[in-house]
Amino acid sequence: MSPLITASQSTAPRRRRRFTVRLLATLFVLAAFVPGGGARADDLQPRPGRRLLFTEYGQGPNRFVELEAAGKIVWEFAPPSTAVIFQALPDGHILFGYGGKPTGVREITARGETVFEYVSPSTQVFGCERLANGNTLVAEQGPCQAVEVDPQGKIVHVTPLTTSHADPHLQVRNVHKLESGNILAAHEGEGAVREVSPEGKVVWEYTGVENAGDAQRLPNGNTLISCGTQKRVLEVTPTDEIAWEFTAADAPDLNLTWISSIQQLKNGNILVGNFLRGQEGKGAHAFEVTRDKKVVWTWADHRQIRSLTTVRALGE
Image (cartoon, rainbow, N blue to C red; front, side, top):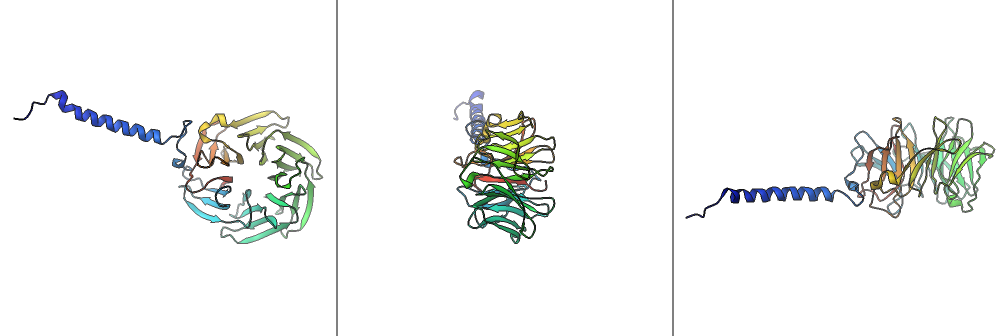
């Protein structure tokens, strides 16, 4: 005769199964997070419709990488020597500085073909910008100066830049020519941002921004600064007041390490590059943040790259 089974005994296995399912689900959720409460980095991808172009640099290969909206690498290019800063041009070309021997600026097509090149007599070049008149602005280090060259590579103007940093490697990073004709330059080694006249006279400066890699003048007259190892993005007024800032404390799960690039997007948000130097495998490579400090999306795929410097959203 079969043993008598009570109602409570018959439901016990089902309760154990439900408990096991719940436990496994809980463990799965916990596994998707890293200490600090942030989502696991390699599960985060750009939102649909956002294509990225960036320079990988550090422990991985130094290369340009284009990432489609789904997170797949669709194009890559190896520069002739160290490249960490670039400009994505409207026609799909890429303008970048390269800091080896020789050093200079090169423009390439989407196929990697060179269509413009300026070989600099300076010690090293990283920053550059294509101007509205078709000329190219070059940030030369050793001596520290902004050199404007025409499409044939002929120098048309030289603006001396002021820095107290003797080592050419860290004298200046990105440079921009303003509507006034002045030059806005980020001096990484000194931790300073300066606006100078075409003749090199300092007309405005903001100091105390460690490893500043870029500074961009906004339409409202303020200046947006990537503050390197201070782990923050800063907007300052012409009178040196902080109008807005985003710091590591605003989003601990991003593991802000070295704010290496900034891009003001058409929707008013900011695309930020986070150089994970010494923190490879942890946190976000890039993220988009609103002015009310809401992180719209992050990209942190550590299987495809180790760390990046400059990142740009294409089509902006």
